[in-house]
Length: 110
Length: 112
Image 1 (cartoon, rainbow over the protein chains, first blue to last red):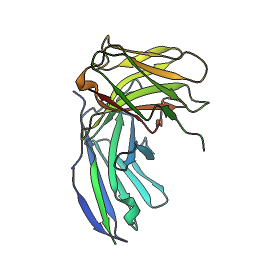
Image 2 (cartoon, each protein chain N blue to C red):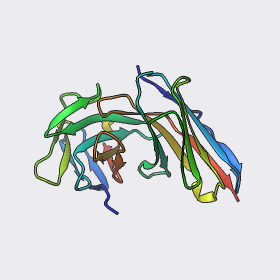
Image 3 (cartoon, one colour):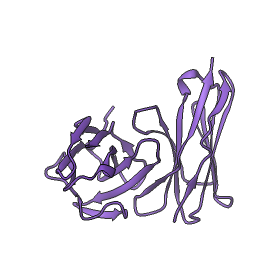
Image 4 (tube, helix red, strand yellow):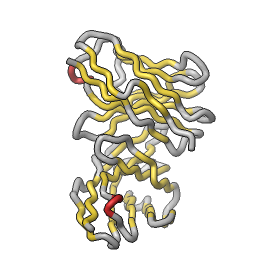
């Protein structure tokens, strides 16, 4: 069974701080990795994709991938209350199928 | 900005009835997907569809489920005989290639 693991949280950070979200996956053959944001009652919204080892930055978001450790992370700089949501890690295990983690709930306090 | 649309937003049906959930993927996308999320649980893959055929399906996607692209824009998920445990949010997604998948707003299916 191909698994994606995340700490369910909540992760509480003050406004302006860096939020660090982590994810591990079990399928060593996975090739592409995604972070989605999901507000309560809404659908997953794609915020980052990463395909190779290292860092990828997009605005306040940085995704980090370490395939040797089977580890993906998302950093959110200058966190805002509007960033409060559940962040889903998703891994493409091949054949166009995304396997999702349970998500980490992030709370950003003003 | 192009987006995936889904109808209806909420569907209530009785156990044993057939339901069809509809999706309009992003227009230049070639890959289409259905996922579901039972309340409080993780998003689960159901099926992927490319070139007018199923590419992959999960163990959830049994004979009660089917998908169809009846025309150039719509993508549908049919559940033939709904069960109580089919109650969930159903998300359609599409991708241009085998990469970033963009999700629609979802259909909340309630089976009574």
